[in-house]
Image: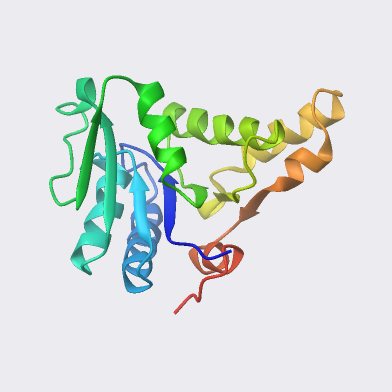
Length: 183
């Protein structure tokens, strides 16, 4: 698969672990260096803002997709090559899906989790075959791994579905998972 664009879901807050910001910045720089378009939620704050700023610092391509009602709350990132304003969250997620070759979930909150689970559901329902990767930085997503294992143990999901979501523990591992060089 030739990766041209990567959808990244992540927090509109920085979180409590300074390592998140360091690792997210590394990812942004690497995407720009490899000429991979960042497709993301369009915000200028939190990890979203760190990621977009890191891509922009290196002259990378950015498509931000943000609903009009979040334009001020998440402070739309003005350095994006393309900033798409939508009427609602559904349109935002659909555009991000359509414009991306793969999906990555970095640490984030309820919105990040919801976006990750939606593209995973679509994968389960065979609506796409694009890679879905969870970047388990500093072990952030361990509770999700336990929850997903529980859905299998309780008979509500197949292990084959859970195995389609790749979990990696570092940015170099993430890049390798999608076929990109770490440096």
